[in-house]
Length: 380
Ligand SMILES: *[C@@H]1O[C@H](CO)[C@@H](O)[C@H](O)[C@H]1NC(C)=O
Ligand SMILES: *[C@@H]1O[C@H](CO)[C@@H](O)[C@H](O)[C@H]1NC(C)=O
Image 1 (tube, protein in one colour):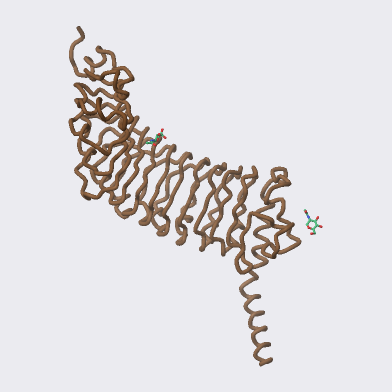
Image 2: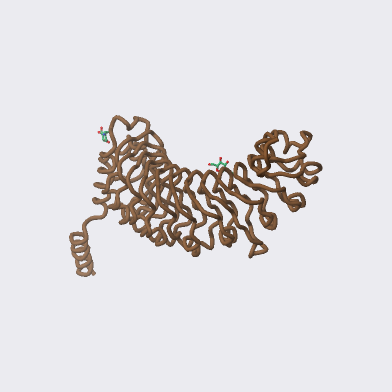
Protein backbone atom coordinates (compact mmCIF):
# COMPACT_ATOMS: atom_id res chain seq x y z
CA UNK A 1 0.00 0.00 0.00
CA UNK A 2 2.60 2.54 1.11
CA UNK A 3 4.92 1.40 -1.67
CA UNK A 4 2.12 1.93 -4.11
CA UNK A 5 1.51 5.38 -2.66
CA UNK A 6 5.18 6.31 -3.01
CA UNK A 7 5.07 5.02 -6.56
CA UNK A 8 2.10 7.32 -7.27
CA UNK A 9 3.87 10.27 -5.70
CA UNK A 10 6.98 9.77 -7.78
CA UNK A 11 4.88 9.20 -10.88
CA UNK A 12 3.05 12.47 -10.34
CA UNK A 13 6.39 14.21 -9.73
CA UNK A 14 7.62 12.90 -13.09
CA UNK A 15 4.44 14.03 -14.81
CA UNK A 16 4.56 17.47 -13.29
CA UNK A 17 8.21 18.04 -14.17
CA UNK A 18 7.79 16.83 -17.72
CA UNK A 19 4.44 18.50 -18.42
CA UNK A 20 5.06 21.71 -16.45
CA UNK A 21 2.83 22.91 -13.67
CA UNK A 22 -0.44 24.20 -15.10
CA UNK A 23 -1.26 26.06 -11.88
CA UNK A 24 1.93 28.15 -11.86
CA UNK A 25 1.58 28.64 -15.63
CA UNK A 26 -1.86 30.09 -14.98
CA UNK A 27 -0.60 32.40 -12.26
CA UNK A 28 2.18 33.71 -14.49
CA UNK A 29 -0.36 34.15 -17.31
CA UNK A 30 -2.63 36.19 -15.03
CA UNK A 31 0.31 38.26 -13.82
CA UNK A 32 1.27 38.97 -17.43
CA UNK A 33 -2.35 39.80 -18.25
CA UNK A 34 -2.52 42.31 -15.41
CA UNK A 35 0.89 43.83 -16.03
CA UNK A 36 0.10 44.61 -19.67
CA UNK A 37 -2.62 46.97 -18.46
CA UNK A 38 -1.56 50.49 -17.54
CA UNK A 39 -1.71 50.72 -13.70
CA UNK A 40 -3.11 54.24 -13.93
CA UNK A 41 -6.21 52.79 -15.64
CA UNK A 42 -6.92 50.28 -12.86
CA UNK A 43 -9.30 52.05 -10.44
CA UNK A 44 -9.13 51.03 -6.79
CA UNK A 45 -12.72 49.75 -6.83
CA UNK A 46 -12.17 47.53 -9.89
CA UNK A 47 -11.84 43.77 -10.18
CA UNK A 48 -8.27 43.98 -11.39
CA UNK A 49 -7.22 46.06 -8.37
CA UNK A 50 -8.18 43.11 -6.19
CA UNK A 51 -5.92 40.72 -8.11
CA UNK A 52 -3.21 40.31 -5.45
CA UNK A 53 -0.94 37.38 -6.20
CA UNK A 54 0.08 36.75 -2.58
CA UNK A 55 -2.77 34.23 -2.59
CA UNK A 56 -3.78 31.71 -5.27
CA UNK A 57 -6.38 33.12 -7.68
CA UNK A 58 -8.59 30.08 -7.18
CA UNK A 59 -8.34 29.91 -3.37
CA UNK A 60 -11.45 30.64 -1.33
CA UNK A 61 -12.97 32.75 0.04
CA UNK A 62 -12.45 35.69 -2.32
CA UNK A 63 -12.99 38.34 0.32
CA UNK A 64 -9.91 40.49 -0.19
CA UNK A 65 -7.96 39.04 -3.12
CA UNK A 66 -9.41 38.21 -6.56
CA UNK A 67 -12.82 39.50 -5.53
CA UNK A 68 -14.10 39.44 -9.10
CA UNK A 69 -13.12 38.95 -12.73
CA UNK A 70 -12.25 35.27 -12.45
CA UNK A 71 -14.13 32.02 -12.10
CA UNK A 72 -12.37 28.79 -11.20
CA UNK A 73 -13.28 25.16 -11.41
CA UNK A 74 -11.11 22.47 -9.81
CA UNK A 75 -8.49 25.16 -9.08
CA UNK A 76 -8.18 26.08 -12.74
CA UNK A 77 -9.29 29.39 -14.20
CA UNK A 78 -12.30 28.77 -16.43
CA UNK A 79 -13.68 32.27 -16.94
CA UNK A 80 -12.04 35.65 -17.21
CA UNK A 81 -14.83 38.21 -17.26
CA UNK A 82 -13.62 41.72 -16.54
CA UNK A 83 -15.70 44.64 -15.38
CA UNK A 84 -15.94 47.66 -17.72
CA UNK A 85 -13.69 49.83 -15.55
CA UNK A 86 -11.87 51.60 -18.38
CA UNK A 87 -8.76 49.40 -18.34
CA UNK A 88 -6.30 50.37 -21.02
CA UNK A 89 -3.52 48.16 -22.31
CA UNK A 90 -2.75 45.30 -24.64
CA UNK A 91 -4.00 41.75 -24.36
CA UNK A 92 -1.02 39.64 -23.28
CA UNK A 93 -0.34 36.70 -25.63
CA UNK A 94 0.40 34.66 -22.47
CA UNK A 95 -3.37 34.51 -21.94
CA UNK A 96 -3.03 31.36 -24.05
CA UNK A 97 -1.66 29.56 -20.95
CA UNK A 98 -5.13 29.62 -19.39
CA UNK A 99 -5.94 26.42 -21.23
CA UNK A 100 -9.11 25.62 -19.27
CA UNK A 101 -10.68 28.96 -20.14
CA UNK A 102 -14.21 28.70 -21.52
CA UNK A 103 -15.16 32.41 -21.31
CA UNK A 104 -12.96 35.38 -22.10
CA UNK A 105 -14.84 38.66 -21.87
CA UNK A 106 -12.98 41.95 -21.55
CA UNK A 107 -15.62 44.02 -23.34
CA UNK A 108 -16.25 47.75 -22.84
CA UNK A 109 -12.71 48.74 -21.89
CA UNK A 110 -9.88 50.33 -23.78
CA UNK A 111 -7.68 47.44 -24.85
CA UNK A 112 -5.67 48.22 -27.96
CA UNK A 113 -3.13 46.60 -30.27
CA UNK A 114 -3.54 43.28 -32.06
CA UNK A 115 -5.69 40.34 -31.03
CA UNK A 116 -3.01 37.77 -30.17
CA UNK A 117 -3.07 34.76 -32.56
CA UNK A 118 -2.06 32.63 -29.56
CA UNK A 119 -5.74 32.67 -28.52
CA UNK A 120 -5.96 29.62 -30.76
CA UNK A 121 -4.37 27.61 -27.90
CA UNK A 122 -7.50 28.11 -25.83
CA UNK A 123 -9.03 24.85 -27.00
CA UNK A 124 -11.91 25.03 -24.51
CA UNK A 125 -12.97 28.57 -25.31
CA UNK A 126 -16.71 28.90 -25.93
CA UNK A 127 -17.30 32.62 -25.58
CA UNK A 128 -14.92 35.35 -26.69
CA UNK A 129 -16.03 38.94 -26.30
CA UNK A 130 -13.72 41.85 -26.98
CA UNK A 131 -16.51 44.24 -27.95
CA UNK A 132 -16.18 47.99 -27.38
CA UNK A 133 -12.40 48.21 -27.19
CA UNK A 134 -9.77 49.59 -29.56
CA UNK A 135 -8.23 46.44 -30.98
CA UNK A 136 -6.66 46.91 -34.40
CA UNK A 137 -5.05 44.75 -37.07
CA UNK A 138 -6.52 41.59 -38.54
CA UNK A 139 -8.90 39.09 -37.06
CA UNK A 140 -6.46 36.19 -36.53
CA UNK A 141 -7.60 33.32 -38.80
CA UNK A 142 -6.55 30.84 -36.11
CA UNK A 143 -9.43 32.00 -33.90
CA UNK A 144 -11.77 30.19 -36.26
CA UNK A 145 -9.91 26.94 -35.63
CA UNK A 146 -11.28 26.91 -32.07
CA UNK A 147 -13.55 23.90 -32.21
CA UNK A 148 -15.65 24.81 -29.16
CA UNK A 149 -16.10 28.49 -29.89
CA UNK A 150 -19.81 29.32 -29.87
CA UNK A 151 -19.94 33.08 -29.64
CA UNK A 152 -17.46 35.57 -31.05
CA UNK A 153 -18.08 39.26 -30.48
CA UNK A 154 -15.39 41.63 -31.74
CA UNK A 155 -17.78 44.48 -32.51
CA UNK A 156 -16.91 48.14 -31.95
CA UNK A 157 -13.13 47.95 -32.44
CA UNK A 158 -10.83 49.09 -35.26
CA UNK A 159 -10.17 45.75 -36.90
CA UNK A 160 -9.23 45.84 -40.58
CA UNK A 161 -8.38 43.48 -43.41
CA UNK A 162 -10.68 40.91 -44.90
CA UNK A 163 -12.43 37.97 -43.30
CA UNK A 164 -10.32 34.81 -43.45
CA UNK A 165 -11.38 31.92 -45.68
CA UNK A 166 -11.02 29.70 -42.62
CA UNK A 167 -14.17 31.28 -41.14
CA UNK A 168 -16.23 28.19 -41.86
CA UNK A 169 -13.91 25.92 -39.87
CA UNK A 170 -15.48 27.29 -36.66
CA UNK A 171 -17.96 24.44 -36.57
CA UNK A 172 -19.50 25.29 -33.17
CA UNK A 173 -19.89 28.99 -33.85
CA UNK A 174 -23.52 30.08 -33.53
CA UNK A 175 -23.14 33.82 -33.09
CA UNK A 176 -20.69 36.14 -34.87
CA UNK A 177 -20.64 39.90 -34.34
CA UNK A 178 -17.96 41.95 -36.09
CA UNK A 179 -20.04 45.13 -36.45
CA UNK A 180 -18.49 48.60 -36.29
CA UNK A 181 -14.98 47.78 -37.48
CA UNK A 182 -13.10 48.53 -40.70
CA UNK A 183 -13.33 45.16 -42.37
CA UNK A 184 -13.06 44.98 -46.15
CA UNK A 185 -13.46 42.35 -48.85
CA UNK A 186 -16.34 39.99 -49.42
CA UNK A 187 -18.10 37.47 -47.21
CA UNK A 188 -16.43 34.05 -47.27
CA UNK A 189 -18.11 30.72 -46.66
CA UNK A 190 -19.96 30.85 -43.35
CA UNK A 191 -19.77 28.19 -40.64
CA UNK A 192 -22.45 25.48 -40.65
CA UNK A 193 -24.03 26.14 -37.25
CA UNK A 194 -24.27 29.90 -37.37
CA UNK A 195 -27.58 31.39 -36.17
CA UNK A 196 -26.70 35.05 -36.21
CA UNK A 197 -24.27 37.05 -38.26
CA UNK A 198 -23.76 40.78 -37.70
CA UNK A 199 -21.09 42.65 -39.64
CA UNK A 200 -22.87 45.97 -39.67
CA UNK A 201 -21.05 49.25 -40.38
CA UNK A 202 -17.85 48.00 -41.99
CA UNK A 203 -16.55 48.34 -45.56
CA UNK A 204 -17.49 44.95 -46.92
CA UNK A 205 -17.85 44.84 -50.69
CA UNK A 206 -18.67 42.45 -53.50
CA UNK A 207 -21.62 40.14 -54.03
CA UNK A 208 -23.40 37.86 -51.62
CA UNK A 209 -22.49 34.46 -53.06
CA UNK A 210 -24.79 31.52 -52.61
CA UNK A 211 -21.72 29.34 -51.97
CA UNK A 212 -20.98 31.39 -48.82
CA UNK A 213 -24.37 30.51 -47.38
CA UNK A 214 -25.01 26.93 -48.53
CA UNK A 215 -24.00 25.28 -45.26
CA UNK A 216 -25.72 27.86 -43.06
CA UNK A 217 -29.02 26.09 -42.76
CA UNK A 218 -29.64 27.52 -39.27
CA UNK A 219 -28.99 31.14 -40.05
CA UNK A 220 -31.91 33.21 -38.74
CA UNK A 221 -30.49 36.73 -38.46
CA UNK A 222 -28.42 38.53 -41.08
CA UNK A 223 -27.35 42.07 -40.20
CA UNK A 224 -25.03 43.46 -42.88
CA UNK A 225 -26.29 47.05 -43.12
CA UNK A 226 -23.97 49.99 -43.74
CA UNK A 227 -21.44 48.30 -46.02
CA UNK A 228 -20.76 48.47 -49.76
CA UNK A 229 -22.24 45.18 -50.89
CA UNK A 230 -23.33 45.14 -54.53
CA UNK A 231 -25.31 43.15 -57.05
CA UNK A 232 -28.84 41.85 -57.42
CA UNK A 233 -30.21 39.87 -54.50
CA UNK A 234 -31.28 36.49 -55.78
CA UNK A 235 -34.18 34.24 -54.70
CA UNK A 236 -31.93 31.75 -52.88
CA UNK A 237 -31.15 34.38 -50.28
CA UNK A 238 -34.70 34.80 -48.99
CA UNK A 239 -35.13 31.05 -49.18
CA UNK A 240 -32.36 30.31 -46.67
CA UNK A 241 -34.23 27.70 -44.63
CA UNK A 242 -34.14 29.36 -41.17
CA UNK A 243 -34.09 32.99 -42.15
CA UNK A 244 -36.13 35.37 -39.95
CA UNK A 245 -34.57 38.83 -39.91
CA UNK A 246 -32.57 40.54 -42.60
CA UNK A 247 -31.05 43.99 -42.59
CA UNK A 248 -29.11 44.86 -45.74
CA UNK A 249 -29.91 48.57 -45.68
CA UNK A 250 -27.34 51.21 -46.66
CA UNK A 251 -25.46 49.10 -49.18
CA UNK A 252 -25.20 49.33 -52.97
CA UNK A 253 -27.53 46.58 -54.08
CA UNK A 254 -29.09 47.34 -57.45
CA UNK A 255 -31.91 44.85 -57.57
CA UNK A 256 -33.89 42.18 -55.80
CA UNK A 257 -35.37 39.05 -57.35
CA UNK A 258 -37.59 37.15 -54.99
CA UNK A 259 -39.46 33.95 -55.73
CA UNK A 260 -42.39 32.38 -53.95
CA UNK A 261 -41.17 30.86 -50.68
CA UNK A 262 -39.75 27.37 -51.24
CA UNK A 263 -40.76 26.50 -47.72
CA UNK A 264 -44.44 27.33 -47.10
CA UNK A 265 -43.57 27.59 -43.41
CA UNK A 266 -40.88 30.19 -43.94
CA UNK A 267 -40.26 32.24 -40.80
CA UNK A 268 -39.07 35.34 -42.57
CA UNK A 269 -40.39 38.15 -40.36
CA UNK A 270 -38.52 41.34 -41.17
CA UNK A 271 -36.63 42.62 -44.21
CA UNK A 272 -34.90 45.99 -44.46
CA UNK A 273 -33.40 46.86 -47.85
CA UNK A 274 -33.65 50.61 -47.44
CA UNK A 275 -31.08 53.07 -48.80
CA UNK A 276 -29.75 50.93 -51.64
CA UNK A 277 -29.97 51.49 -55.40
CA UNK A 278 -32.63 48.91 -56.08
CA UNK A 279 -34.37 49.38 -59.42
CA UNK A 280 -37.46 47.88 -60.98
CA UNK A 281 -40.99 47.34 -59.76
CA UNK A 282 -41.97 46.66 -56.21
CA UNK A 283 -41.57 42.88 -55.79
CA UNK A 284 -44.88 41.13 -55.19
CA UNK A 285 -43.51 37.86 -53.84
CA UNK A 286 -42.42 39.31 -50.50
CA UNK A 287 -46.10 39.24 -49.60
CA UNK A 288 -46.23 35.48 -50.08
CA UNK A 289 -43.94 34.92 -47.11
CA UNK A 290 -46.51 33.94 -44.48
CA UNK A 291 -44.80 35.52 -41.45
CA UNK A 292 -43.51 38.73 -42.98
CA UNK A 293 -44.54 41.60 -40.73
CA UNK A 294 -42.00 44.31 -41.47
CA UNK A 295 -40.83 45.38 -44.91
CA UNK A 296 -38.62 48.38 -45.62
CA UNK A 297 -37.63 49.38 -49.13
CA UNK A 298 -37.25 53.10 -48.48
CA UNK A 299 -34.93 55.24 -50.57
CA UNK A 300 -34.31 53.05 -53.55
CA UNK A 301 -35.23 53.51 -57.21
CA UNK A 302 -38.42 51.50 -57.30
CA UNK A 303 -41.04 52.40 -59.89
CA UNK A 304 -44.53 51.50 -60.95
CA UNK A 305 -47.66 51.03 -58.88
CA UNK A 306 -47.95 49.41 -55.47
CA UNK A 307 -49.34 45.94 -56.30
CA UNK A 308 -52.79 45.07 -55.01
CA UNK A 309 -51.23 42.19 -53.03
CA UNK A 310 -49.85 44.72 -50.58
CA UNK A 311 -53.33 45.51 -49.30
CA UNK A 312 -54.48 41.96 -48.69
CA UNK A 313 -51.63 41.27 -46.35
CA UNK A 314 -53.09 40.88 -42.87
CA UNK A 315 -49.89 40.18 -41.05
CA UNK A 316 -47.93 43.19 -42.25
CA UNK A 317 -47.38 45.66 -39.41
CA UNK A 318 -44.68 47.91 -40.86
CA UNK A 319 -44.37 49.00 -44.47
CA UNK A 320 -41.85 51.65 -45.43
CA UNK A 321 -41.74 52.46 -49.14
CA UNK A 322 -40.92 56.16 -48.96
CA UNK A 323 -38.27 57.76 -51.13
CA UNK A 324 -38.90 55.86 -54.37
CA UNK A 325 -40.70 56.62 -57.66
CA UNK A 326 -43.83 54.57 -57.06
CA UNK A 327 -46.79 55.88 -59.03
CA UNK A 328 -50.47 55.32 -59.49
CA UNK A 329 -52.89 55.08 -56.58
CA UNK A 330 -52.02 52.89 -53.62
CA UNK A 331 -54.45 49.98 -53.03
CA UNK A 332 -57.38 51.50 -51.17
CA UNK A 333 -57.23 48.97 -48.30
CA UNK A 334 -53.71 50.10 -47.58
CA UNK A 335 -54.65 53.71 -46.97
CA UNK A 336 -58.02 53.25 -45.31
CA UNK A 337 -59.28 50.72 -42.78
CA UNK A 338 -56.03 49.02 -41.88
CA UNK A 339 -53.98 52.08 -41.05
CA UNK A 340 -54.39 51.77 -37.26
CA UNK A 341 -52.48 48.51 -37.29
CA UNK A 342 -50.08 49.31 -40.09
CA UNK A 343 -47.18 51.69 -39.42
CA UNK A 344 -45.19 52.98 -42.31
CA UNK A 345 -44.57 55.59 -44.91
CA UNK A 346 -45.52 55.99 -48.56
CA UNK A 347 -44.28 59.58 -48.84
CA UNK A 348 -41.71 61.03 -51.23
CA UNK A 349 -42.94 58.96 -54.17
CA UNK A 350 -44.94 59.78 -57.29
CA UNK A 351 -48.25 58.50 -55.97
CA UNK A 352 -51.27 60.19 -57.46
CA UNK A 353 -53.64 59.70 -54.61
CA UNK A 354 -52.34 59.42 -51.07
CA UNK A 355 -54.79 61.16 -48.73
CA UNK A 356 -53.38 63.01 -45.73
CA UNK A 357 -56.09 61.26 -43.68
CA UNK A 358 -53.91 58.14 -43.82
CA UNK A 359 -50.90 58.17 -41.54
CA UNK A 360 -48.95 56.41 -44.28
CA UNK A 361 -49.40 59.48 -46.45
CA UNK A 362 -48.47 62.20 -43.98
CA UNK A 363 -45.24 62.90 -45.83
CA UNK A 364 -45.76 64.68 -49.16
CA UNK A 365 -45.05 63.24 -52.60
CA UNK A 366 -42.21 64.23 -54.95
CA UNK A 367 -42.60 67.32 -57.09
CA UNK A 368 -44.46 66.67 -60.36
CA UNK A 369 -41.50 67.61 -62.54
CA UNK A 370 -39.24 65.06 -60.79
CA UNK A 371 -41.81 62.35 -61.43
CA UNK A 372 -42.28 63.39 -65.05
CA UNK A 373 -38.55 63.23 -65.55
CA UNK A 374 -38.32 59.85 -63.84
CA UNK A 375 -40.96 58.44 -66.17
CA UNK A 376 -39.41 59.99 -69.23
CA UNK A 377 -42.23 62.39 -69.96
CA UNK A 378 -41.24 65.76 -71.35
CA UNK A 379 -41.51 68.72 -69.07
CA UNK A 380 -44.53 70.88 -69.74
C1 LIG B 1 -1.53 41.97 -1.19
O1 LIG B 1 -1.89 41.31 0.00
C2 LIG B 1 -0.88 41.35 1.00
C3 LIG B 1 -1.27 40.45 2.15
O2 LIG B 1 -2.57 39.97 2.09
C4 LIG B 1 -0.70 42.78 1.42
O3 LIG B 1 0.29 42.87 2.40
C5 LIG B 1 -0.29 43.61 0.21
O4 LIG B 1 -0.23 44.97 0.55
C6 LIG B 1 -1.30 43.43 -0.91
N1 LIG B 1 -0.79 44.09 -2.11
C7 LIG B 1 -1.50 44.96 -2.79
C8 LIG B 1 -0.86 45.52 -4.02
O5 LIG B 1 -2.62 45.29 -2.47
C1 LIG C 1 -31.38 48.36 -40.34
O1 LIG C 1 -30.14 49.00 -40.20
C2 LIG C 1 -30.21 50.41 -40.32
C3 LIG C 1 -28.81 50.97 -40.41
O2 LIG C 1 -27.98 50.48 -39.45
C4 LIG C 1 -31.04 50.95 -39.17
O3 LIG C 1 -31.11 52.35 -39.24
C5 LIG C 1 -32.43 50.34 -39.28
O4 LIG C 1 -33.23 50.77 -38.19
C6 LIG C 1 -32.38 48.83 -39.29
N1 LIG C 1 -33.69 48.31 -39.64
C7 LIG C 1 -34.48 47.68 -38.79
C8 LIG C 1 -35.79 47.22 -39.32
O5 LIG C 1 -34.17 47.47 -37.63
